Image 1 (cartoon, rainbow, N blue to C red):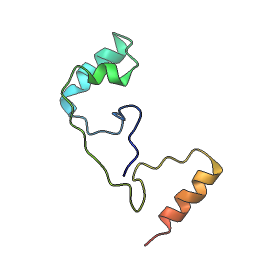
Image 2: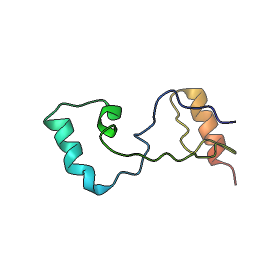
Image 3: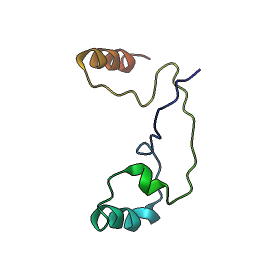
Image 4: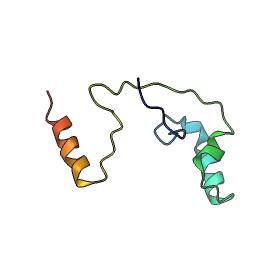
Length: 76
């Protein structure tokens, strides 16, 4: 079974273009920097992504991660 995120990964999202003005206002006028505070203003839907054979949102931050990313990229 997939490990659940500790926090909502809303930055990996499909955002409707219609919220762009609201987002700009939140960032510029309200100095809002927490994504969960912004998304709390809207209805959200969640999608479960399969992580086998690899996590499509794999994040390479260290040399070992880079080696793993290269192995994933080399797959057929």
